[in-house]
Length: 288
Image (cartoon, rainbow, N blue to C red; front, side, top):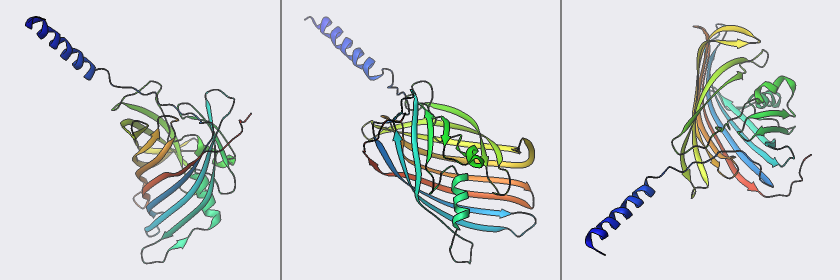
């Protein structure tokens, strides 16, 4: 081969290699699906600090620790495009204290109401949730009527189109917030953004970061506008399996301010950590 021809061949190879190296980034279609038989044991822990002043009473600062063991099974159904899960709390405890006072345990009745209103379910009754392949909740069963509103949205929310590392997608929804179990919750408009951060575990899992914000000078309560200043921020990340789209761990921090007037306000900060401690394979019959 002549030198000129050899040079051309080398240039061709280098260009080919460069084309391969700078080709289109790999994309992934994020979807929720139910494996043949899976059971997840989940451990959740939340640390929170709450500062409240209402009805001209002295400001109170309270620290909380919520610990939950939760069992979730994924159930195959004959309904195409719908993923069904059944979740029940195995154990739950909520400890709290005020500065200068000993730790105290929350009563069972208050704890049960808090679990329902937090969208976590119950120790007494399993909650069945139906979601589509994007993770959007389509219906729930086993939730008392007065708590149904807290189960309309979930953290899982995938885009319609395939995404690559660095891509983001947006979300908007309205979330009820319970301030007092004796009155109707406040509906807060929330904007969220997810980002496909990176691949982990030899490309089997993906880290997705998220950020939710809300800021307004009013909230809705039973269809009426209530003059109140709202500021909310929650950000964190979740590790999901690319095979089935289910989170294996979630970590986040959040802050929430609800100010009715200079003398009436609620301010809270939370640190949230949820980890799948065990994944069990078991035979589950297909539901009708």
